[in-house]
Image 1 (tube, rainbow, N blue to C red):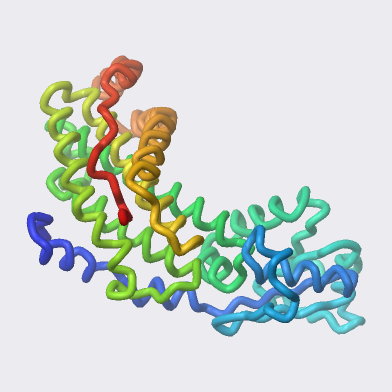
Image 2: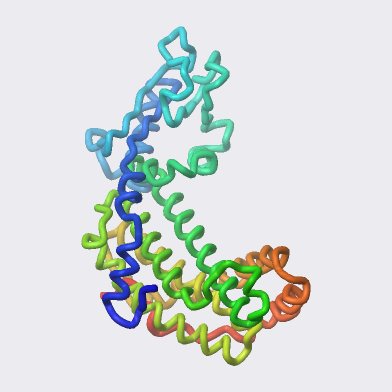
Length: 334
């Protein structure tokens, strides 16, 4: 196992990340069909290809597609008017209004009006096609903010759940046979997950996906690992049952902070100040209680009854054990 006691240990962890796979996944060409009024199609194409909030600032001529992405327009989804009958020709088909009549039965069409508007349609597409999230967001900036939020939330939940699992094995050694987790690998796993999150965020924001190019965003994760680990282990020693719940909250909040700071950098090109990062961490920590409680409740169903009863009885005391804001959570600091 890689040790985080020196820079080489951090590089050993990064080497185990499938960076090439992330880059390949993000660059998979995506094809979208827009069906409906030709005049409206141009507006929707603009919304797809320009980041949210920038449409009024960028002229129509600036619309560009990357990585082999394509957008085709059709007056309707009727095969007699030229729309393909085979359902796999396009990755996504979007009805912008009145274009889905007489469409092939096997073709899935996302209607903006029927789904409740533009943002709701984007959310639904990502719900149905999570395997396309990286290339969709990379090639069509309209998806980026939603995709970034999902990537950060998924990673934070995964890290919090892992912290809960390793905490259970440390607090109750006799339950370790129930959980295939090596409690000594916690920081390695958390660090690897955060690094993968940053690389995935870089991918969806159109950045180059390799460790050398992203070292500015990745390197600070190492320093944060020491701070979270020290507090978590101290809590485990004082209050072993509640301590691992607080450790999960720290893992959740720390991961959100890493992700949101990287997202801010990719969106603006600016670095957050130390004060901004601390506020971000405090907000994430405050919001983590509900998240961790829900994760703990889910885990209770898979553990021995005596263990789950102790978790439930002590979960309400989390608030009294909230640690002071970490001083070393400046993930990307000037």
